[in-house]
Picture 1 (cartoon, rainbow, N blue to C red):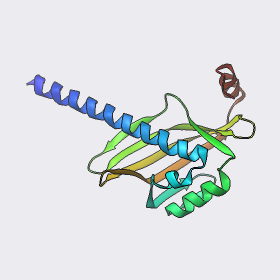
Picture 2 (cartoon, helix red, strand yellow):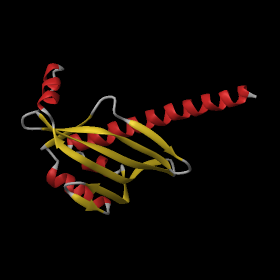
Picture 3 (spheres, rainbow, N blue to C red):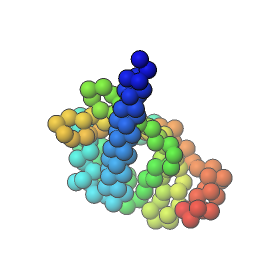
Picture 4 (cartoon, rainbow, N blue to C red):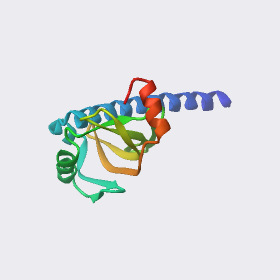
Length: 157
């Protein structure tokens, strides 16, 4: 009786690991485009009706505004880094996945990382394509002196 349950749990773990790899790869790709200001590529990762909630920047309700704000406030000014070990992925049955984690932001001009925040992204898998439908970026704060020192000792700024 327990063997089928154990096999099912093993399949779920494999599926969860595969989903985590997929979402991690998507996160890497979208933020590589973000960091390089490749807005053509960046745009493809968002649903046309994406909702983006930013605790200090407000809410936007479409892809064009997200891309426009990225062009205006981010391009060639800020680089995003995902904080290692913080990424978590949860499946959404018959829809896609929830991605959550923490990221920090570094000034392109100086290379110094000055702030961090938490994020949640809802990814939809539709017609073989993954796109974000909801984004939350919140809890923005300055890095502490200890966090900055830790980055410097690891060769990051």
